[in-house]
Amino acid sequence: MSKVEDTVARHYTHGTLSEIVRGGLEKLGAETDTNPIDLLAAVDEFHMGGRPATKALAQALQFEPGSTVLDIGCGLGGTARFLATTYQCQAVGIDLTPEYISVGEELNEDLGLTDQISLHVASALDLPLADAQFDRACMLHVGMNIQDKQKLMQEAARVIRPGGYFGVYDVMRTGDAPIIYPVAWAEDEGTSFVSSITDYRQTLEAAGFEIMDVIDKRDVAISFFEAIMARLAQGGPPPLGLHIVMGNNAKIKVKNMFTNVQNGTVSPVQIIAKRT
Image (cartoon, rainbow, N blue to C red; front, side, top):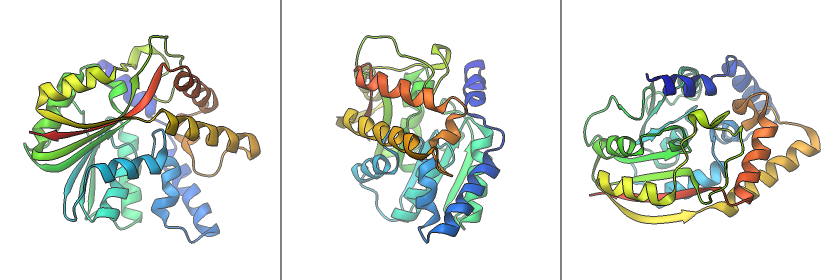
């Protein structure tokens, strides 16, 4: 693991995530008969737009039952759980942060999903996976922590079979103003490598992908942050929410991300690419 990757992993490390997430799930589970995977979405879908954004990406990737999918930068495994249970596919997730993988594996065991999902500590720049192993791959809010986008896309291309699809949903630069920190993915610019839509297109194409679709989801992000801030203003944070994974300065991170999006500096962008 490189120095930057180590810093990124420490940024996302919580320390007591297992007891907080599982405790929150137990509390909410006692109050409702909602599917636990849907309850977990409040904390394990760590990206602008949450579960609805995941659904939109999945629909664009045209999943088929029995597909194999890789989630690059899987976090707690929320997207992998959603895909595995919704589309009856086999999911693999990788992430730099050991605590995320440990807690994600615990949740998979609790939910009886270990036969469908496996999570591993690994770098997106050096995937411990076979060539052409997957029908689909996705990456949600990950590239902002990776400077070498070309290597990132090359590794994704290596493990996706020809004709397979890669769905990217990252925060991208849409303006020239400085990014206000801290944000969810970085405390400062030392581990923040936000690139433009053009950069993503060029590195994807150079790696062997054909760009099928690009959608700027600024409006999704604005609605998402407005809803979070309204909930916090009304009664404080819920038992499960993104404040848990963002840490003690979650409020300022939310405020800064909202401002960065409103100002046109960054925006979450969905790209669908086909492996040629």
